[in-house]
Image: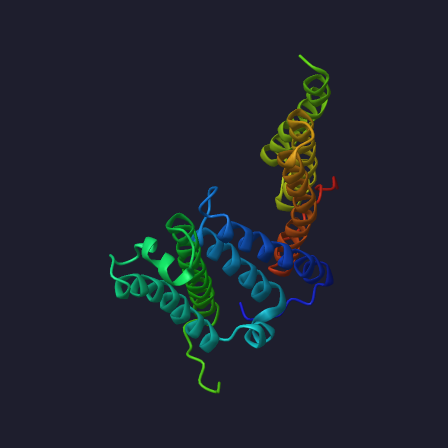
Length: 151
Length: 103
């Protein structure tokens, strides 16, 4: 599983495809409240692009781009964005994740504040799902061995 | 029926034909590599023809552009995955099928 493929065709096609996959993932996250998609789906597509990189370029090169520690940090960071926006609504005096109250600090009408608030939550969910997907695949491909000699 | 619908018929029928041919090849060919050959080539062409037919049927719009993008990425990804699978099978020691010679 940890063997690096030396096949030029697979590596070259993956290098072409990965930016488009990531762009599509961002589109799915951003368009979540207008069309099918959203934070979870976009995060999974974004995680799949990193998994494709790991499969084609091997574990050692993938660790440079996204290590286990970074994946853990990103997953916590995504949950922090999600719950932070929820708690901000709570502090401003409405229910948890009730984005209408965000209009007082964003200086927009409540309908637009709802749209922006749910976009922020989608971004947080997307980051968390991407990092957790990558982390699970990382654990499977290393066979459960914990990385010891990382910073 | 307008001209777009008529023009999309040959593409969709061609796609249908190649899907059927690829499936028959998958079911009837003797070993792994022959089957991969049939599905890898047949499905790529069939998907391409079907998606072009659908984009002609849709007309000139954003949806047909998206369908054409899907066709381009299918055309990139499908032969590559076929190549990767056959290469992995070769490494794992899958023997290609040879016709038994009469002594």
